Image (cartoon, rainbow, N blue to C red; front, side, top):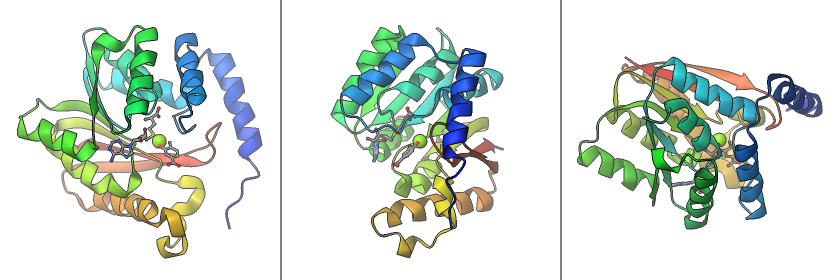
Length: 229
Ligand code: SAH
Ligand code: DHB
Ligand code: MG
C-alpha cells in the first residue's frame, strides 16, 4: 500500500526551499513553462534536483557530460551550468518536438553553445558515440524510457573512465519499485527496467552504487548514484 499523504506537505517544503535558497533561475523556469505550454509532459526534475545535478557536476569536476532523455532541456540546462562555459553536454532525445523546444530553451538561457542534442533513439546515438571512439564522459545522467535502463547503463559504462559518475533517475516511482511488474499493466516494461537496472548496479563489478529516495514537488521518487571503478 502506497501512502501519498506527505505529497502536499513535501511539495510546499520544496516551494519553501526554492525560495529560501533562491534555487530558481528565471530563464530556466521560463523554459519549463514554455515546455509545458508546448504540451510536453511535466516530468522534468525539480529545481532542487536540477541544482543537485549542477553541484554533482561541479563537485566531481565534470566538464564532459552525457544525458539520455532531454525533454525540454530543463535538466540539460542545470548540467550545462555545471560544466561551465568551457565544458560540454551531449543530450539524447528521440522526439523532434522535445528537441526543438529544448534547443529554444537552451538558446534563451545562453547555454546552447555548450550543448549538443542528438536526435534519434538513444541506443543508436550511444552506439555511434562508442563506435566513433568518443572520449569518455565524466558524468552520465540516464533519464529516458526506463525499460531500456540496462541497455543505457551498459553503453554508459563503455563511454566511461574510472571515476565517471552515473546518475539514474526515477528508481522509486512512488514505491512501485516494490510491486510485481506483471500486475502493473501498461507500465510493466518500465518497472521491470527499473528493477533490472538496480540489480545490474549490484552485479556489475565495475561500479559502486547506492540509491536515495526523494520527496518534493515531483512526488515520491529517487535516483541511483554510481561511480565507475
Ligand atoms: N531529463 C529531463 C526529463 C526527461 S523525460 C529533465 O529532467 O528535464 C524523458 C525523455 O526521454 C522524453 O523527452 C522522451 O521523449 C525521451 N525518450 C524516451 N525514450 C527515448 C529513446 N528511446 N530515445 C531517446 N529519447 C527517449
Ligand atoms: C516519468 C519519467 C521521468 O523521467 C520522471 O522524472 C518522472 C516520470 C514518467 O515516465 O512517468
Ligand atoms: Mg526523470
